[in-house]
Image (tube, rainbow, N blue to C red; front, side, top):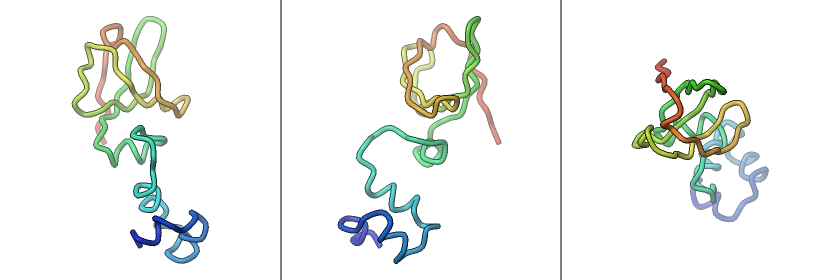
Length: 97
């Protein structure tokens, strides 16, 4: 399956190996080091947080080793994109399942 992902299109690969395996295909062929959805965030070991400030309440994923008192790049669940936030302006509450 891994060798096929190197040369097959996403649709062709899904037809051969099953659409339920597409997250595996995406993990092999992903070019960006940043996640694009919550599943990728969890697969990368990122921690889920609610970040509260006077102006914003954000549902985010942050890298597990992130210094939350610094400026950090996080994945925003409202916009489904990477954003940078000044962590020292927020209060973080970890979301555990």
